[in-house]
Length: 114
Length: 109
Image 1 (cartoon, rainbow over the protein chains, first blue to last red):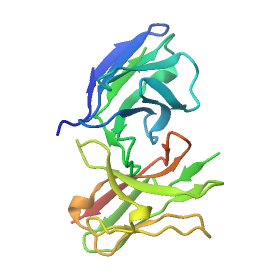
Image 2 (image 1 turned 120 degrees about the vertical axis):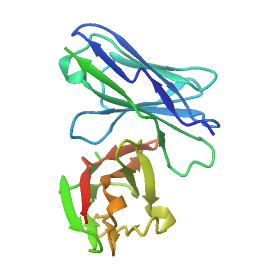
Image 3 (image 1 turned 180 degrees about the horizontal axis):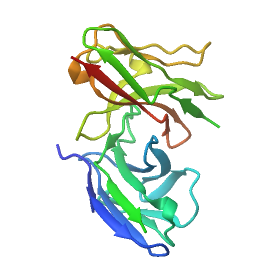
């Protein structure tokens, strides 16, 4: 069983730039959620994708957007980067049917905004 | 709005001693609570969920609705229990998780 994979693992951007982060869900999972984890904090929910549509969103501005593809992989896009966007971005996948509430996390993409 | 509070950032205990990691929540609905753990150089993973009422690696957690708490307990800590522990509450149509800020547990030899 292939786990959740994310790319890139690390990246550095400057303020105002745009970034795209990628995630491949675990085999058999059709739902992908994205979380932002600032240093010293717990993960914070950004949004979730199911059947290629946004299925829930946390308290993040519209410059945070996403996509889900037919193979259930997903992208997180952040426009007009700000210094506070520096964080670890975690992708998590799950099943929609028989969902016990368990999320399976990737190792994350660490974004630094200068 | 829902909120999860873990009052201890750091907790150290000696091997064989009991350990309790505190978690309090605020939620207007019926809570669904989890403990996630992150061992060194590993990804975040589920430890246990309150609905299952199970013991995993010797850990248990009881939901106390009166005190709005979901503390994680283990009677005899082991060195391999050293990790970051996050309490989380599930809510919303997406069953998104609201995490606490985490407790770094260190079990000393």
